[in-house]
Image 1 (cartoon, rainbow, N blue to C red):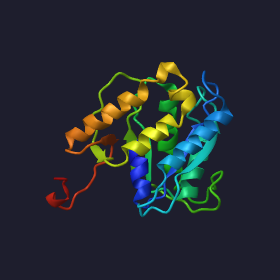
Image 2 (cartoon, rainbow, N blue to C red):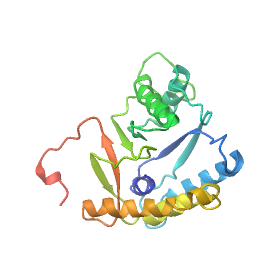
Image 3 (cartoon, one colour):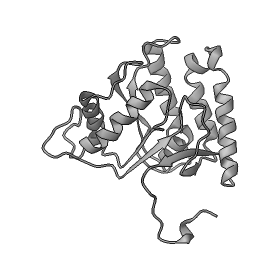
Length: 224
């Protein structure tokens, strides 16, 4: 959802990327290298000249262990602390049907952290004294390891932000450039962007799923 991140940031929204792990252990790169790549990716997704956005995309590292992520009360409260600290109104999570155990655990952790973040009289680690909050929306992006075709609730137009998305992916040099096994990934992501855009009459789009209904006040709010 890099195009959505770039678009929201350019529109003036404060966007925080929560890295649940530092990727260690993983076959390629090391924690220092991947941290630099992650910061470069965030910079590339931040507003540039000509956009009204004033907030750089922020990254926070939660510190869970890659390949060992578990849905625990401690992990929930760590995530709830970030939700309070940022006063998040909208949360994006991995789609809840997946073959990757870490993805499934992250989704469960943050779904419950959304509830934990609103509990009064209960400080959360790292909340920096910010008050309880219940984010109004949770949307799911499709990064699943299952061989399924997305069935989204809505598509978000990312026309004009494709280049920022692609450059942010390639910023992870150790994963998508130096790693021959994943060298094809940026290409098929770009193809998916174009296909999804064709479904709504735009050049590019990204897919999201919502468990809770989106409301309209009239048909005039439907896109042309």
